[in-house]
Image (cartoon, rainbow, N blue to C red; front, side, top):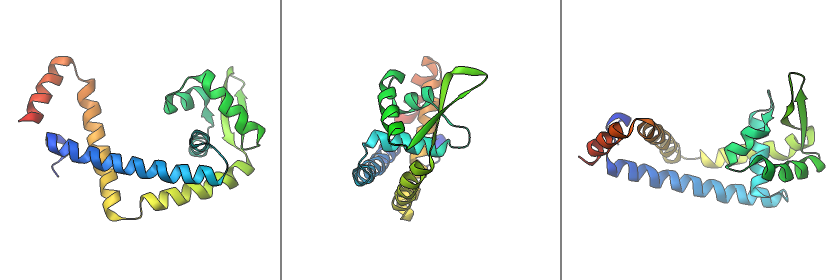
Length: 162
């Protein structure tokens, strides 16, 4: 595969397919893990975000944005997780309007083994690791291209087609 600077149309397609396979595998694994914990896939993803941001707390607005949902929609999910003692909220003295979410001890014992299992399964082979790296490179290049002014984007599209 070419470098990120000279990726062609076929390269983007190959990387897209590799990324799609990786994402599909991730969804299958996450679905199975969620089912074993009697959680929804979204609830597992919220717990994963809270685990990742455990040191500072996961901002409710940030969680909603990351999941592509509204904060009002997310309230029901967070309340459900809080009622099951999986997460807890904190309000900072500097801004009492914002809520930050962290895993409880019980939540950590539930989700951390699942996260380790998912990470292990996803990175089990060298090919999957390489696909993940190539997907990230292509995604960054595509994101960079899409953030350029429209005239620059047309030029980039012509370069890729060449």
